[in-house]
Image (cartoon, rainbow, N blue to C red; front, side, top):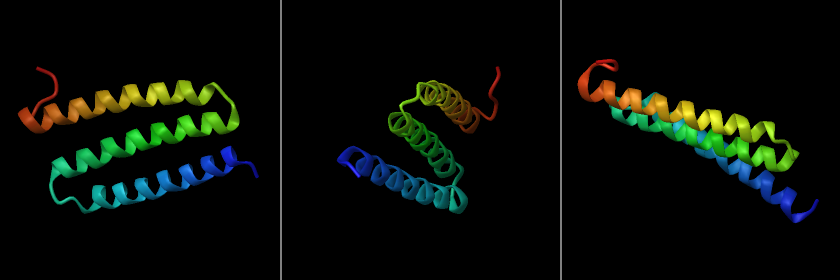
Length: 91
């Protein structure tokens, strides 16, 4: 096993641990702001995982999926932040 393959596997394992910890924060809370921040972090780590998988498998499809995931994660986070601040998403 070469160095790059080992680094990719270790990176994926560390991202999985980070997602598990964020999932615990998402479930535990205690406030809605903590849950939104944990969900945003899960989106970011999932996007990073897709990028690392794209490097490992040498496939461009993962990069396109990561781009879409970043777009939807940003839109979802901004909508949730607006909802928590004002109580409505669409004015």
